[in-house]
Length: 51
Image 1: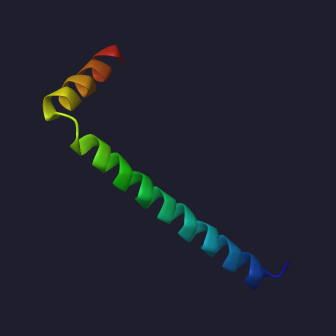
Image 2: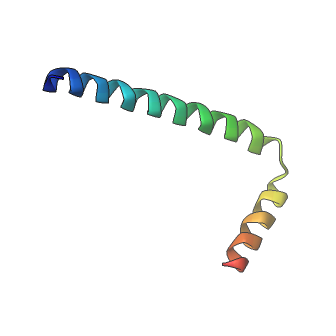
């Protein structure tokens, strides 16, 4: 495989990973927006306490 082709494939894979990450972040944001803020803070504090 040529360096040019390899580079193009790597760039395309990188774009796909970024796209999937953005979509996952959007979905997580939508999920978290449904939870009460107090519950999120409580869970974060509990997690930190357990470390």
